[in-house]
Length: 98
Image 1 (cartoon, rainbow, N blue to C red):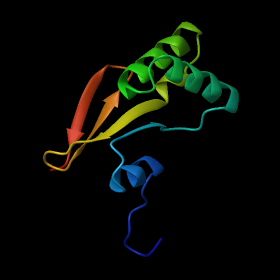
Image 2 (tube, rainbow, N blue to C red; image 1 turned 135 degrees about the horizontal axis):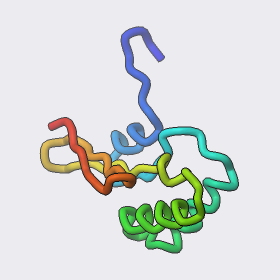
Image 3 (tube, rainbow, N blue to C red; image 1 turned 90 degrees about the vertical axis):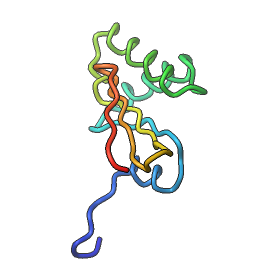
């Protein structure tokens, strides 16, 4: 990183590269927990990331794990150029930019 540059998260890098939506953890998650979460995500509708994330978060919560708290859906907002973070723990959406 050059002086004066900000670090970019992997999720931000993917969004900047043009990917529409990214599901990513905002903290370290153990391999076994992440595998269970991803399996539940795929079973819950990986074609629709919001539905998959919701299903995986619910499965994690029902299992008594806190893995659901780590994962979020990051998406681009094509109008205005900002991005939104769909926060799975409150079901809300906050947008910035544009």
